Image (cartoon, rainbow, N blue to C red; front, side):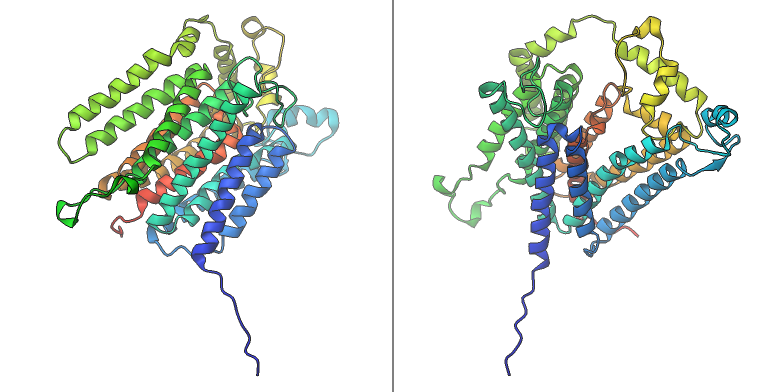
Length: 458
């Protein structure tokens, strides 16, 4: 009898394939102008959801990774439930938004909603859930220290590819149109992104990722008794190549002329590098710390003029007026919110024409925290933010406490978190899918590296 031949695919090979798929999704999400407009928003969103669906049945043998995955699932479930509740028809009464109570008599309505626009909330919820699914997928793909390190390096190279492509387009093809109707060079260095602030956010995250890859790919120290020193032919070219990429990314950040992007990412990055230098157990730590900080200052002195020139611009910023109007809307809808993603529908009623004028429209609050509180209400927003921060902080602090090697990764992960958190106070980087997905994947790899190889805590 003929024996049936079976072919089994190694789980490691499957995870390698999924990691390549994750890198492809992140590259496309950034390449499509940040995926801020249809159909690119829907394309990359479907790909991210499909990747999470593929990763869902993968086992998680590590108890620390399993705990992170379960906590992430809890946060996503709570966000989906509250967003769904805002779209559920309710009897007209104190729970429904006042706009439905006002319309009940005129339109003979018997039911209303927590959200002022249920369809808008339904359309906006994927923007909140999908980055969480990318974080979820990245955790599942980082089941071992080796796979987590490979995922981090792959993320850094994916970001560097986008930065290099942006540089090439800006220098050699400034009139090219990359998935948009306007040329690449339309007044500022933004590369493949919608504007310079979005570009600076992505470039800043790439800088943190490359700095981590420099630590991951650093040659291990050799003991003197282990044999002769390696020949020059065996010296890896990874380190100088990564340093050159990091330098190019830092110059690109400055070239964007984004005040918040450059003045938040660069100091935080060099502060993290100084902390990493101080963690070294060899002698001369103080000298290395001073060298890192001095290098950062020298970089800004030599190349920082594009950013410094914008710092001396007009002090009056219309965002202050937008924040004041958003705060007034929050006070009127403090507990249940107006519905996630409904800022554009609510803000016109609170807009101050004396402060902002009457021309133009505001689709974003330029403060992601205020917009989240307005949409979800203060209790739900604080709960989701608190759980998310706790998840990341617990992982990174455990890595700082227990890891014996690569303690730079939790430091740089916290640095990336601080950068995006601070930038979200004055802009909306996490409301751009291409940036939100990359940020979520970087946090996922950083949390996995931090959690793995640590003592299991009961």
